[in-house]
Amino acid sequence: MRIQAAAILLAAALLAACGEPNTRADRGSDLLFLQTGTGVTVVDSAASSPTVQSTRAVPAGDWSTIVQAEPAGSSTDLIGLDPTTGDPVWKRRVAGNLQTKVVSPDGRYVALVPAGARYARQTQRTQITVSGREVKEPIAVELAGNFEPEAFSKDGKTLFVVQYLPANNPSRYQVRQLNIKKGAVNDVFSVDKELQDAMRGTARVQEMSADGTRLYTLYTTNTPHGAHSFIHVLSLDEMWAHCIDLPHGFAMSGQRHTALKLNGDGTRLYLADTAEGRVAEVDTERLKVVREAELDLSSPWPGATMSFDEEAPAIYIGTGRRVVAASLDDLTQTDSWDLPEKITGIQVGARTRRLYVGQSEEVTIFDLTSGERIETWDPPGTGAIRRLGPATPGLKGERASPR
Image 1 (cartoon, rainbow, N blue to C red):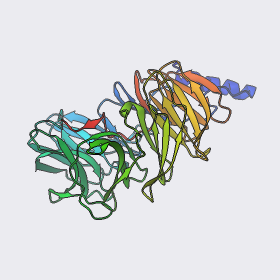
Image 2: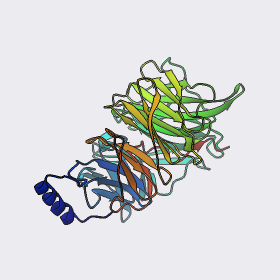
Image 3: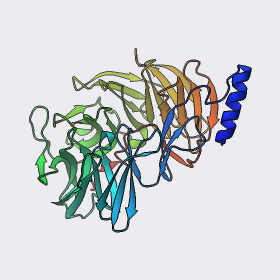
Image 4: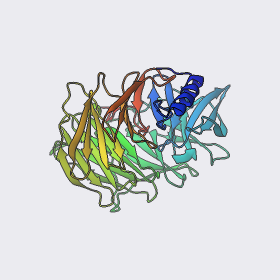
């Protein structure tokens, strides 16, 4: 449903006079964060046009800033956009035809690589440029080896990178840290001061804490004792890493069946394995799995996405064409809804008691208080919806050991 702004205002005025509010604007609105076939889109649920729409943009981990990269002759213009208004809040120019790879919270720091760069291939040298709101002059670094930017440290002095080994024919990778000013690559140690070695395996999904101090990545790997999964915890302020082993058989079915979501204060991390119908809760302070439960997440179609409701509190899991709600009191199912199409994302309203469920080109809206379906809405200017919700824009797909 595409409604012009004038029509929205007119309808709102008429309904206010009658005392029967029916429009989406009258019920309040939420900012919806979408990754679409044309790029990144932010749209207000009561508006007639997107606030942000860009084909060359990458959001910060908390979506407080969206960084757009625009070609400018032999250079690239970086523009930090306010997602609530679409207005530019800062701008930087960097030399070369570059693409944005990693954005720190608030867009303070941005890591760029040459446009079209592909990692985990036969790359002997890596070029990385650092710019951003708090970087007056861009810093260009050339490294001997095959590296991929992963995340910035909290203070912006370090860029965590993934190094593929050996560079010319990779079979494993290792998380390391780049001192941006010195251009030196150093090892990462565990919380117990043990070296984080190179490993084989598959990185499936990621979740960044809202304050930008932790990055959680779900890995699966094969060992002499069999296959298993674990959460790789990367501290971006205390500069350590740690691996949390998951229960046997958990999250072995691939990215399409796995979702991660932190609660609001980052003290709990929830994992959903829709293929096995299992949910786990991780205490992020004790760095261990503290609860596990089984839910009916069965669906003939693959899919996994999750959102967190602070007010309930509850988690909402999208699995194929179903949404399952589970209470966090005991991790038991409290409700479920069937959708006509495969779910591409879920977002709980930050301003309203509504649940937005993305599908291929539409969003179905539910009232979380009553559980009733309100409407199905075609967000303006979006086209195909590949992802709905402020998901961490890290892994574009599974990152597996190349061989």
